[in-house]
Length: 127
Image (cartoon, rainbow, N blue to C red):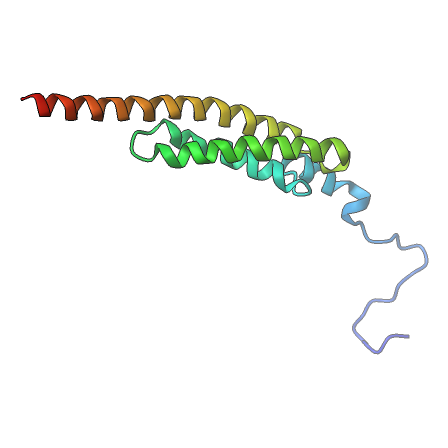
């Protein structure tokens, strides 16, 4: 008997409480957000934010994020292969592809900016 007089009595026919493991809620959440695979999350967000590589003034930050996205994307794929319950393969691929594409565009833009600055400096020296 419990010490709480306000607690309802438990009957033998009462089913056990429903938990996340019974419903499979953690599987749904880990499919959308692979919280068991940290590298895939880092790759995903770095790949998405590496779009900043395409902006002229903060392109270097985007290029760094692109490199981080590719490195962690590969790490996350390896981890997902070794631990299938970790999931996150799609997040890794988004990080790898986004980081590669935005990183290459960002490097090209940074190179064009440097070439334009050098050309402007040389042109100003000639006058």
